[in-house]
Length: 161
Image (cartoon, rainbow, N blue to C red):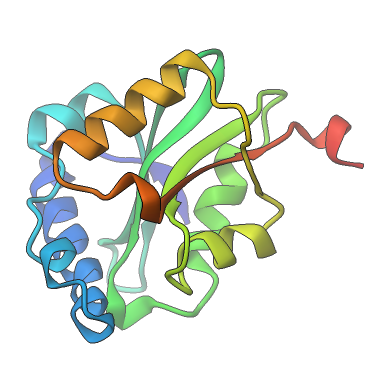
């Protein structure tokens, strides 16, 4: 079940984000695993959808907002105990149902990042919009290497066909 996050769940979403970062250690990116999760304030400022597991608690989330008229995925995280079950794809599908394009930024060469999003239909953006460029500058200011990052877009359903 996918639904809007409840305010009381936001701290738990930080735990999901921390846990979902752990696999980065295995590919030589411990700084990503050690990065702070989205703040409670940032989570509260975004539209956050959660996937509810069998125990009745969130096992994954997606935080979206508006960037240059597109739905922008600021974060999508699946707890490792629930990974590889299609939950992340279901969350992405949930936010792509509108008539708007969906954008995100991600690591170019991490298997569960850009290659994964390409399988879902996203394409690399050659000419980023001003807002998306701002997102990428903010990421660089937090230490994310711009050479390893890519902006991606999924066009609205009527344009994809």
